[in-house]
Length: 165
Image 1 (tube, helix red, strand yellow):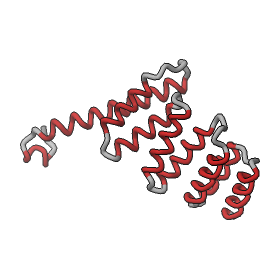
Image 2 (image 1 turned 60 degrees about the vertical axis):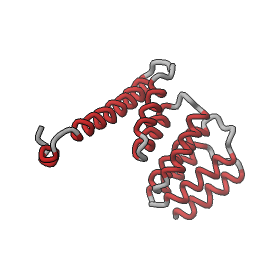
Image 3 (image 1 turned 180 degrees about the vertical axis):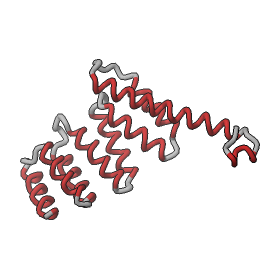
Image 4 (image 1 turned 90 degrees about the horizontal axis):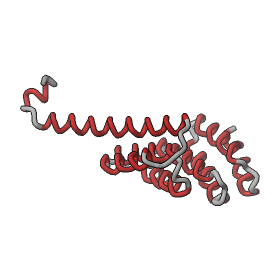
């Protein structure tokens, strides 16, 4: 069944008749069936044929989530960077890219990226406030973790092991 989903979607992409919403439905079905790589292939094929689509950044963002699921942090990061380049106001891409940077050991770059997102001049909407709040929470969490790690480094070894302060 998933092979049919993939092949039919691929044919529609080649014909230029697969809408983004249908792409999302098809790739979600594939991912739910554990077919992450075919879903990624569909996103990439759709992106290649729709570079001028006004919502192509959404396809990059969704593909990045599948890239992350597949353990391909490099591809996920590149897709998110492209999504941001296409639509600098798309806050979810900043949040996810910051997470990738943090997990790769680049917490300072993650914080910088989240600060960039928070400081974007966006209209005040529920979603914009929610995204800004998420970015601020990420910054606070990373700074708090970093501060805790610094404090722990200065504790005597015995206290560090037992967790007492």
